[in-house]
Image (cartoon, rainbow over all chains, first blue to last red; front, side, top):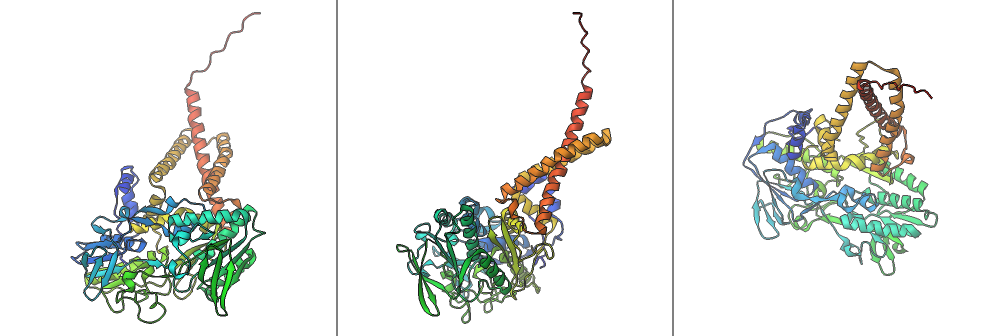
Length: 443
Length: 127
């Protein structure tokens, strides 16, 4: 996809300047391959609700593309979480510090960060209200608030239970991912029954629940307790993954690895004391005991979005409150000065950092084009990517679009459905660096 | 990746290595310059080259061990032809770099020996 803003400027911070000072020509290298373009002068007020991967990347791109704009980031969380690293922490190969940093470190110069959550969004009055009641009028709004992990949607479940009673959940943050590893590691030392699954509805990184089952199977094997263990994956519908060809491949691998699969099983309750999980099935509720369970909560838009006029009013994404945006432009269908980026966008796929990387240039181009009085042809095709870990040391580099097509970045070289070392090496060495470069608007 | 340009690669490597990036580039440049200088001064010395190539084998192995260590993986994770290519690439980089380094060091050591005055023979003493 074309670099949507077409500007290609890479600002040099102190570290890059130091690189220059060392005589390595950072400035020249940084400009290679992307033609520089003039900034668009504007006095527009742009509010970005949410300063996660999507919000920060948007701020960096907009700050580079606009001169004079008042860009405001609104987010109550001071910590930044590198969420693609959660599974590595949950696997015990990285410490929690690997995924933690400070939001402030990525805020570009000239952009204001308000460290409060967006409490209310009023697109009729073009205003965002923060948790303390501060009103922020805007000309353009980018909603990048991520989504809410609804652990309460599973009866008996609470975030505080992660790490106790054989309960794990890598989604709830760095410490939860570590606690998940500790619970899983204690289980792996003796073996037993391990349960996995995913919730119905849209979710971030739908590959993670599958990965974690692979990882646990691998660790059991390494510790010599695999033979006495049973692993069961509970799919919420009749497939293991939304992309049919990937689903089939995972089914084959699960079969080879002896991971059982139960379809149309939705986790509805856990009883930590008795270690009993209850699943809703078409035939009624089914109970299953566990020695270890990886809980993936239902997910939905955050309250500020759900309670605003912005969500879909009908269809798949209405109940969970995702924004009603055009799937190609990510522009709101009813409020043209509102865009959605990242997990909160009501589009069929794309709740990964890789999706953000593709979405941000598209939204930037449309917003800058509006301000410059031109039309943008940039479109997001639903691209997303998932290095699907199949064991510690191997992964499949799965990339696909809205139409369930595989769209490999390295066709003919890295086979997308093959368990390989190279995607693992990429995940371990280059992915976080690419992610941080994306936050800074450089990749 | 949506686009892989030298600028993007630079940004990614910068985030990956931080200040180690210029240090590593400087080290690579230094070794290359020394190798070329020694080559121009002494010409190609066959015995020295073979010795350096043999010593460079350890450099290739060190590169692989380093990669496995930093990526929490091992030789058993090689899964397909592209992995073998990656393995060979890493090994060749380590081997090539090691060869150049040892060749340059051997050349510098030879020059230092040549500069030192020859040892005077010790006269035999009658028993």
